[in-house]
Length: 371
Image (tube, rainbow, N blue to C red; front, side, top):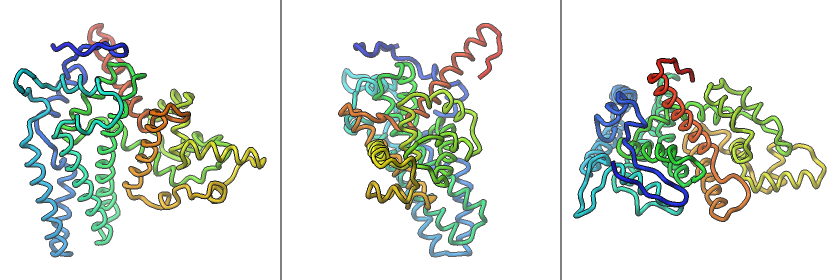
């Protein structure tokens, strides 16, 4: 086992990836390279082909060419060596462990020129795949596919969007030295798996919950100014997932999490929220509606996003908050330094680690683990 780096902040030893994943899961993760289409995605693609044969042969030809381009792109990326394959460059030996050590050693800034080529090309593949499925969603809607079928295409697009977002979240978590090093190691290994296959196990936990939260958020008409009761209103507005309830109950009392939740709910930056609160305080107003925010701040808080189910709007909303958080962190300014998505993914990883520890303990003692 290769020794890791030592610093004032981190003291760790590189570990086998098996420590973070079950053997059955590993066999599944590493049995193939880049995932072109999952089983569910392939069913949808075949459905689209079958319908377009009779509905619109011209559209079918365009669609078939796009899918062929996607497969060619995948084959080209596959020529690059696996990130889990040992490579020797003169005296240097590269493995997944040395990649993890490199990821943990880097602090802030743009990692672009330090990332594996396969990671860069794979992101382009995922964007192309996302665009293909958003096009299929539009075709399905316009060609009068059933409501459930359109929803299936929409869901596939949303899952791809969350997979793209997961990479950004992982990179953000790697920079957070407040997170224990064993969790950051888990983040680095998860990121490596994501780069290798362009699919992610944690998205299955994160995506449905955040999608429900986003859908509820678009339906809400929050009362600006007091910022009181928004979390309770959110909890009452969606069919809650147990894990999300645990996250809310255990983390919302932390100022950093609460501020990131406000940004998410209100569609305003921390700075705009503080400005609005001061304006209302100065004017002696307790609360206002969304329309009045336009007048007070001279901007419309995402009016177009509240009437749009396009997953690209979710990613746009996230990326603005992500960039603002990075800027505050870099300049040590008040406000959230991480997004709500960062906090929720960290919570998922911590709970997974806790469950793994409990399972190991249960096997050693013969007791039953309850989580």
